[in-house]
Structure formats: structure tokens, C-alpha cells
Length: 321
View 1: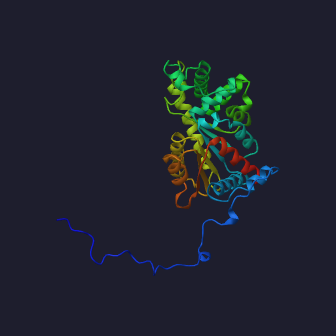
View 2: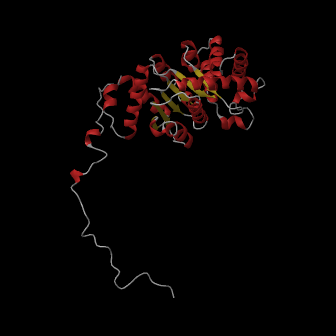
View 3: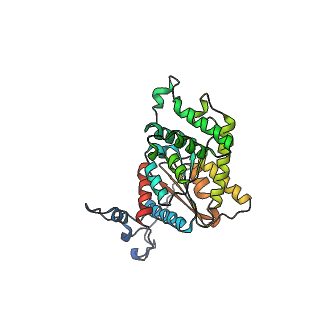
């Protein structure tokens, strides 16, 4: 026979002696002083920003913007690490404006940025319909894109420069009609470092007839070392933003951080952030947490769509200066 857990004297636990305290005596995480205020029809952008609730992501955004402004005042790097989605959502003009104001001192990009930014510069459009072209084997087969990227890599190898600089130089030489919307063109003209980080086979240009693994490897390795020098200079107030890269740039950033410290260079009092619509493992671990551990720095993770979040961050940086 099964043994019953019920006994004759089993009764519900009495609540009459539970200890309580006055509500007003308790420390709370949220108060009405931090609440949002309604936006008025004639509110300025500065007013709008001030009316946002000083809670969670808004507070993090304000703190991050403050660190970007601090980095500028200290003449420390503000490095924007971006994936292709940042370009595809139309944010190049926002980033270019921030660069001209001194809030972007370097860009680190994965290979998809080279593709989309180059196509924007050349024809004013990008982002093909993969589903429609994949079945026919036409995905990524645009002639000009593949030729430009691979020619730039070969010439970059010849001249011993990085892939990002080589791409900027190649685009500028063509005087593309939409260069005003190109990060590659803008950074090259302004002599702002643009490092490009590719893995062979990840980008459409790697299966074009002119693809040269040696050229791609040498130029992107040059950019890896340039990126390491930029990160070294972040000590004492620099900022690194990871935006729209879930794997490539977080892995590279972690390797660069350990390289800098392996060589005996100090790397403390800096800020990192991951801004994306999904908080993935590698950005959180390799950008936000590990590099800043043990008080070495501060890290932020802010979730949101790039096309909303980056203009909001830019506004906070500029309007609160």
C-alpha cells in the first residue's frame, strides 16, 4: 500500500506571525521622479530626450552617450564596430555626421559592410532578394561588386595596406555617384581608420573569378593589427561599440584585447557596448563582460532595432553635449 503524506494533524501554514514593514521605509528601484513625461506638439528634440524615463535602457543609453562625449574630450578612440545590417538600414548618414563631429574616430567592419556600402556608393541601392536568386545560383553574382572588392584586395596587398583602406581608395577613384552615403568614401576622405575583417567564404566576393585568398588574408590581417593598435589607445577613456555583428567582430575584439594585454600594454577605464535587436552570446560575453571584468571598464547591452536605436543614441550624444 502507498504511504499517504497526509497526517491527521496536517494543516496549512499560519500567516498570522508574518513580519511586515512600512512601505515608505523600503528602498525601491523605481520612483516617480524617473518616470516619463508626455511629449508636447512643440517639443524640441532636446526636450523629447529629457522627457524619456530615466529607467533601464534609457539610463544605459544616457550613460553610454556620456562616455562617448568623455572619450572625445580626452582625445581617446571611439570605435564603431558594425555589421552589414547597419548599412542596410540606412544609418550611414548618421554615422558620417557623428564622425564629422568627432564622435566616430574609427570604424571596424565585417565583410558584409564592404559589400553593401560599395553597392550603395556605386548604384544607390543594395540588399538583394536572396530567396529569389539563390535557386538559380545568381545570389551574390553582381559583377561590379565582386570585381571591386577583389581588385582592391590585390592592390592593397601590393601596397601593404589594410583591406578597409584599400576599399576606400578604390571607391574614391571611381568617383561614385552616391559617395555622400558611403562610409568607406567618407572615412577615406577624412583619413579616419576603417578596418575590415573577413573570413574566407563568408562574403559573396569570395566566389567571384578574381578572388585571391592571399590578398584577402594579408589585407585583413593588416587591419587586425591596426585594430589592435586602436584598441590599445582606448586605455584611459576610450569606447568600443559593437553594432550588428553577432560573431565576427566580437571574436576579433576579444583577441585584440588579449593581444594588447599580452604585449604588456595597460587597458583599463574604457567602455564597451553591444547594441542589437537580439542580445547574442558572443557580443555579451566577448564585448560587454569579459574585457571589462574585475573593474577594468564598464559594459552596456542595449536592445533595439538599429534604425531606431542608433539615431536615438546619436541624438543623446549631440543634444546632451
